[in-house]
Image 1 (cartoon, helix red, strand yellow):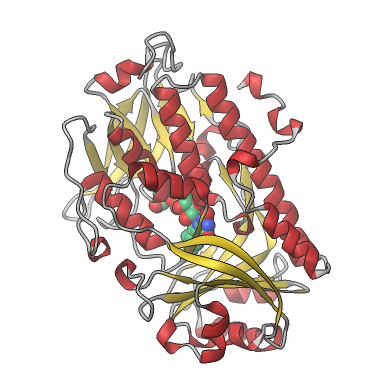
Image 2: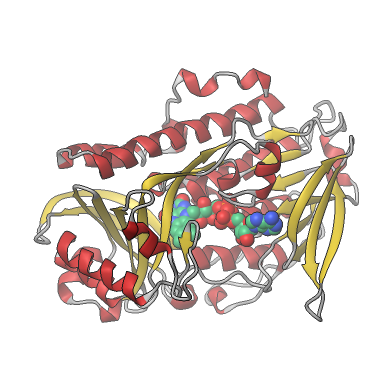
Length: 454
Ligand SMILES: Cc1cc2nc3c(=O)[nH]c(=O)nc-3n(C[C@H](O)[C@H](O)[C@H](O)COP(=O)(O)OP(=O)(O)OC[C@H]3O[C@@H](n4cnc5c(N)ncnc54)[C@H](O)[C@@H]3O)c2cc1C
């Protein structure tokens, strides 16, 4: 129950007043982080508006697998009302050598989901978007205690201004004729869930930039029906790894089209890291899309240049075990992302009227398999604070020690894997360290430094 004594710092107002008022909390970013916030706040009775810059009602399927960490699963256990399973389990970890032989095997349950399944389940819970992803589940009914929701797409936030008790949010959107219109909203609480290149963070911390880590990740999926027996035997319901100098690959089973998890309908998802030095001609070639446009960080599905993809496929033949090279040959939807580092020094700004969550707070290296979990955890902690279940200091500490610790671990294990040549056992230990349940992590003392000043 909300405590009447605790203030949330929003101009000294009582936390409970945000819930009981007709006011709307504004969430910037309508991907997984923003939807986690929207779904949890709705369920706790807060009204929310999501501003998402993508010009279409639904975000495009990212066609990618996500390792669902403990906080992601906890979030769905707590807030999902569709009843649809979000994850495909994997029961074993396998490590391959270059020939494709299994050199290490361990029992380790892990939950694999896909970006689109998580997205559609969250949209069903937030604003009752129906989709084939709900097959086997149901469209949740609105409860009288739910907060009101408003998912506004095509809205790009361009500025925020501190007005004392409120934040003025300026944004643009297009009308039906395609004309760009300037608009604004005020709110007592803005949740920035606008990703690793966060616009909101760039207003608050303009000196902080995403830095390139010297390698990229190439991702894609292949239907399990199209894979050879040799590949299925190591990838089906397995989490399969390969390490070699300058490269690593992991491949696993995820839900198929519309979130189907029945055997035979699923996808094999590959995640392949490869070194491309900054400013090298090869990196330039890779990041120049098929229309000749030099992309900054991501080449989305369908946009890779034919020549760049041929280069990657021949690298796959050269560098990867045959089963993993097969995935690169067979995928129809490859995409590429530069691996970057970013972390904000704090999560609360403008007298606590602005809170950063998920990738906007800290963009982890993907080896941590913790980015989605971070967003889920930040949001669950935020709701506890708003509801008066924890104090402000505890909210800040929980979120910041986790962000700092995982971000630093990601840099360390990523650099060890890409730029050092280690015994396989060391890579296994690095990876197993990232599987320690959140509640059992012992956060080092440095992650608490300076938190009192936030
Ligand atoms: C292909 C892929 C695979 C991944 N695999 C994993 C994995 O295995 N494990 C894991 O834990 N995580 C994984 N992640 C990361 C995970 O999806 C994100 O960490 C998670 O979705 C939380 O991100 P976010 O919502 O904070 O940011 P994002 O997903 O980046 O979303 C930010 C949103 O904000 C919007 N936006 C940005 N600027 C503005 C603006 N100015 N105005 C309005 N809207 C704006 C964007 O359009 C976007 O929709 C993966 C991500 C991708 C794309």
